[in-house]
Image 1 (tube, rainbow, N blue to C red):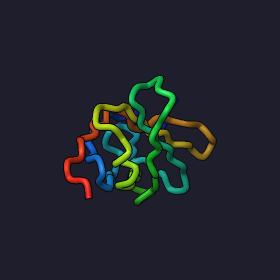
Image 2: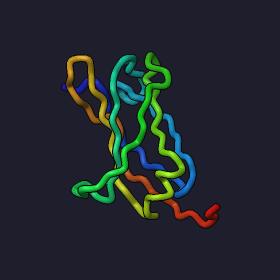
Image 3: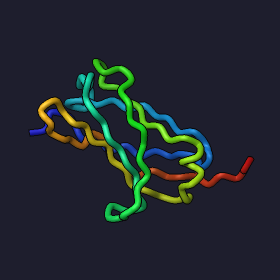
Image 4: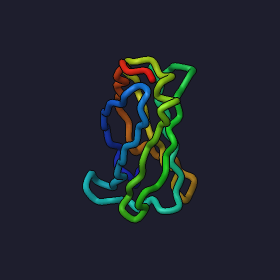
Amino acid sequence: MAVTQKTAENFGLDQGATFSKNFTVTTDGSTAYDISGLTLQAQMRKSFDSSSATTFTASVVTGSSGIYKLVLSETTTASIEAGRYVYDVELTLSDSTVEKVHYGVVTVHPEVTKI
C-alpha cells in the first residue's frame, strides 16, 4: 500500500529559460510526508513510450515538510522542442520501495528571443 499520495499537476516551462518549481509530497493531499534523506527521480518525454527523455535535477528543499524542487538549466530547455510532454516524479523510500508522487503534462512554450 502506498504511503504517499500520487498527485496530478500540470505546468509549463519556457524554452531557453531556467526552470525551477517546488512540489510537496503528501500522504493525503494535505499532510506533508517527510522526505528527508530520500531520493527523487524525474523525467519528461514526448509520450509515455518515447525512448528519449529529459531528466530533471530533483532535490529536497525542506525534507520534513515534504518539499522538493525540479530544475532544468536554460541550455537544457533550449534543446527541447516546443509542445506538450508527459512527466512523472518517483520517490525511493527507505525500504527501497518506489512510489510515483507527481505526474502530469508539461507544456514547453517556444522561445522568441535567442541571445
